[in-house]
Length: 240
Image 1 (cartoon, rainbow, N blue to C red):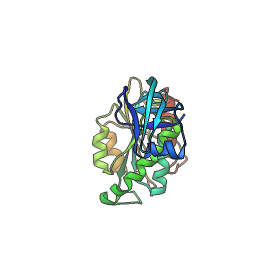
Image 2 (spheres, rainbow, N blue to C red; image 1 turned 60 degrees about the vertical axis):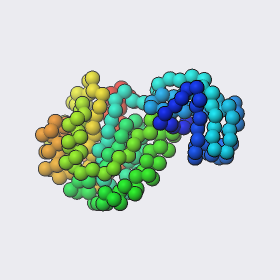
Image 3 (tube, rainbow, N blue to C red; image 1 turned 90 degrees about the vertical axis):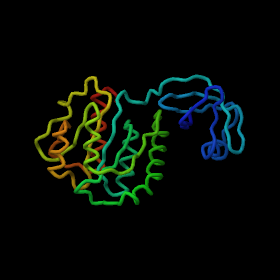
Image 4 (tube, rainbow, N blue to C red; image 1 turned 120 degrees about the vertical axis):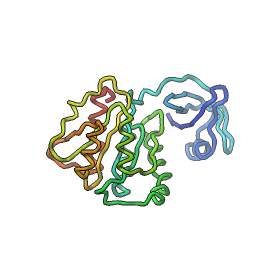
């Protein structure tokens, strides 16, 4: 069933407007009586199409329920900025796996070093990738791709979460299975770019309370590491 997102919903007057309405009427060629799902803040609203105009789709509510695809934990991925094509892949797959938010971080070893101004210009496309992945995977929200921040800002934000984890390629960390996620609601996952993390950066977040996690002797590509870590994390929190 087609899925569409909205930031607010009036159950007595559910409508879809703008580009989504055009897509429903012209591209999907849907007709009155057909069913669609409208997602708002993690709730799925099952609806039937009452009528369609050139720019608005009017819907009748059938039922509503919490989206079964949403995890019970909110995971923020703090991803050190890789090359753009790799970041696009990371966003797409992370959204499919259940991430709640993606925060690009500029670290010392980032090969790609866009200015804040240049990165802001890329955000609409990156958030469009997130939206497409959310629709495809049946998510109840569209995870937001945030503006790029510094490593220091990321370290500060991690302290406000229930649990934070840094993936570090050097030995000395613990396996994921030894991190206690019991009763945790918010999790921060910090992952490096092509060059990994500087030792001083890793030490900084660990002094702030982050768990240093080591995935073994194989060095994963920066686009493979978040997919691996999120898969393990969702499994350990009973969300996969």
